[in-house]
Image 1 (cartoon, rainbow, N blue to C red):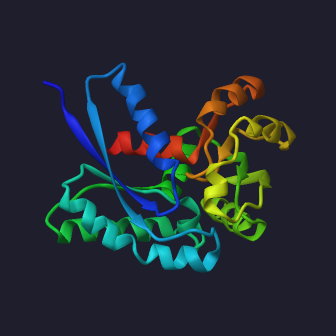
Image 2 (image 1 turned 90 degrees about the vertical axis):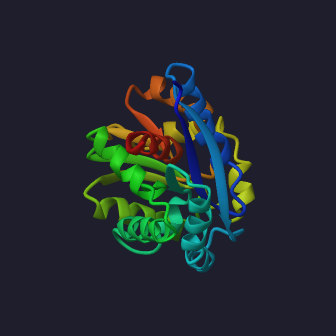
Image 3 (image 1 turned 120 degrees about the vertical axis):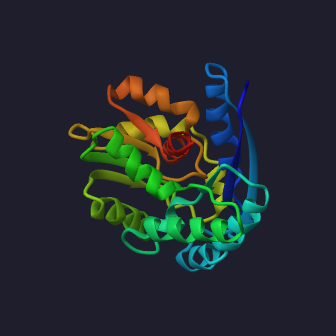
Length: 233
């Protein structure tokens, strides 16, 4: 008998990528495994990727977790990496605990995956001690992401901040451009490259190209999130 899982995603209101890349990864699994998946979202208001908007958005996350638990989803995913990482070191653990509690209090306990925690855990699965990364954020926010990852014990050898504050413009960034940007990174001593440290900036079309060119593991926040969701399921 085929088992169907409900995937719940807590999504920034202006995010249009997480509801395409995450389903694409799960659909790829459906081609080789018997499970089937449906996708359900609740949205938090955010248009500009700036620290003050991110903090206000994060405050809505428990409401979203409660709404998704009404649908009895099998896993909850928090789809905004920088919102978590801008809240201070290790915040993904606090966020995951808070969202699990909200679902449980509504009578529908479910595991929680944050894209921030998923990226850190994914890098550990790869045994990556040193990485290079690309992020669409303004440079101060990108430095917060870099510092957050370093605080988790993973060195960031080099990074590129694309300085795009408008979240819809982040989604419109051509993933093909990431190939040449990745070439410019100082990745010689990196164990892995994060092609998109953001679940809004699309990258799936370029991951394999960059991986073949650089000869080392390449992942994104979306890939790491889908991987961790599959693991908890």
